[in-house]
Image (cartoon, rainbow, N blue to C red; front, side, top):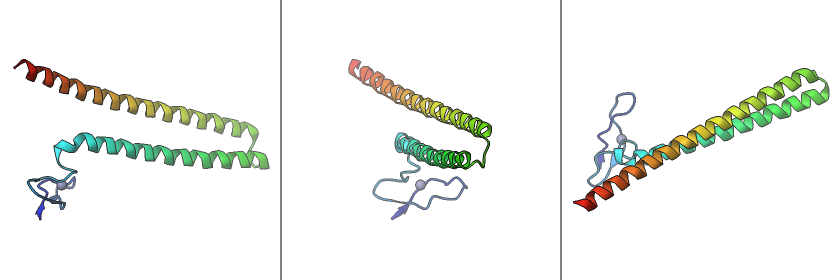
Length: 122
Ligand SMILES: [Zn+2]
């Protein structure tokens, strides 16, 4: 089998095998760029759930410490406010990312429809 003609980020030749008429693997073929981006945004979701787990643990820990009297209620309250701020920030990031994805998809659709209209006129 032939090797991909792409170059890795470190400058080395890509080691992925390609078949048939392909000269580039999935990671390097520009035709799959949209799919790659979509998959990357799923990676973003995985990160979000990791952060959510982390926040769960932090909240449980703080709650237990306040209950046990290890942490002053005033400090617990401030920590709770800060966690709330972090959650709002995460929510903002998620919405901004979603909007960006939607904008990209609309642009792609507009370009496709422009192209279709032009080819109909000919
Ligand atoms: Zn490659």
